[in-house]
Image 1 (cartoon, rainbow, N blue to C red):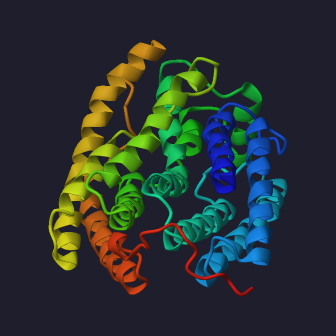
Image 2: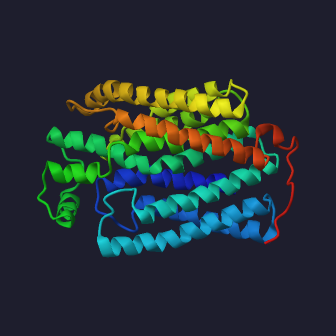
Image 3: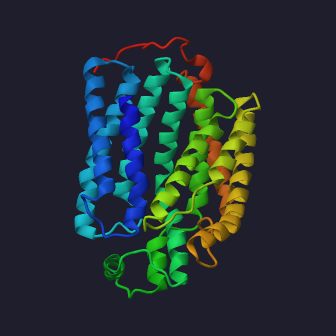
Length: 356
């Protein structure tokens, strides 16, 4: 329960955080940061408790949690120093931010392993994978908020406060114009968004399907995350915060993952699944951009919006190849460390306590 509360607070803070930073000048004590801080405090307390008692974790799970928490706690002051020296982080893909994601990655991986080897239920395991997917997908939100903010600018509407626009322009050495807005809202190459979603996001869903072991598991995990994003969309948008392009395409990709698991052989599954998933994601992104652009335009009273960040279709070949390699690696790791669904203990119990 403690980990669910901690990760829940971090997700709530993160969901608000990107929208906040597209509107206001950065503030260390902004409400989203405070929510994240409460979640982090609970994480630290739980890490200490697990380390002291060994309860609910084996040695590997404990080490993952400890390393993840340690990396995260190192990344926080580094990020603050980075902002003090360099001003705004124009992108959520900056090194200090990536350290935060990496720390959280190991942290949640440790919790998932601890729950799994302890024979924990499938429902909670699925919830932990929703948190895992949210953390992996988080940097993509910059482009999801950015594309709608840029198109709003083209319609003569600015979501960002004047002080934020001026600060960003001064940092870039530019006037406040469309090129400055492009650099602020979409600061990374167009190929990154779809390629990362395929390689990283779909790999998470493939592992979720392996460990949960039921058809539809990947789709439910992605659906829960997308459902959460859909739920908070009006809460943020109609309280005067910038809107985002919700990643509905993840559900299509997840369904393709579940279909791929109808193939029994791991290597065949990974190869065929990578092709199927990549095609599904890129097709869904294209459809989402066209269809939801009109929906967002109607809801916001704007014209010519896109329902997804720019799509560079040529990147599909590299994205599919990257997913294939990572999927094969995940198949091997899950088998090597007895993390397949059929390897899980039947009764809820702790297999081994950790020796700190």
